[in-house]
Image (cartoon, rainbow, N blue to C red; front, side, top):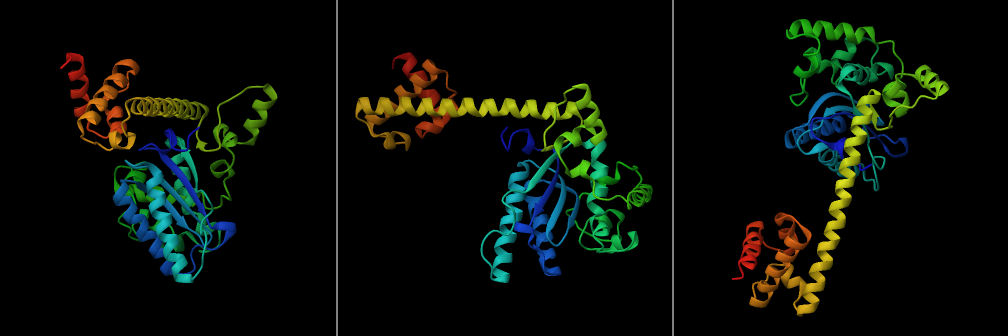
Length: 325
């Protein structure tokens, strides 16, 4: 399953966890946290990502996001790379700051979105960084206070989350506070961050029951949701993987054909691919375009990428060859 198939598509809910390498600290002071948060803001603007919940701990970060038009990879790359460079310069250290790959779990919005918002925003309380829910509202290291209006982060999406509680902002905030209060004594939720099978089924008892009966269900450690949702994501990812493999194989076929035709005609392959305009090169390019289009059914735009001209030029070349002119 490819890392960026359905899992990295726009409009998908992700619970992302980033950890310092070997448990090392990634924030040493308030300036580090503010730098990281300002980078989130810049990436939100660049990638149209929606950040619904977040918590910065000393050694790790939780983010709940809806991926933007460029997917989550660009968002995370821009966020983590820039921060790591600045951090290493500031503290005169070398090497990786974060674990090799952030953990991203694709989530089914209903019923998990609000549970994840609560779980993420209660992190500082569970860790003892604050003692009460009132303190949590004023705590600068998570997005809870932004949702209640006690703190400001212009890049954090609040209307989307509060809209699940009420269309009226005041009522939504009161209901959100009550929802948070009801969950404050919850411990670590393995059903939200643990193995995919447990998340898909809703708990260990359900897993054991289905194992005893021999029943099977779709599951995957990168997906948080019911069996139907998991199966849908996996099927779409499989389709995209097969498409990528077809494109990769087709690209190799195109390269082989171009190389062979250039060798037979004694024309430089580099000159043909780089848009060379010598008459013999142009004539061979037209033959290549016609051959790939008519004999292999390659799309014009794809041929254009391989022969160094525009798609419209490829169309003209094919039409010219067909007319015999």
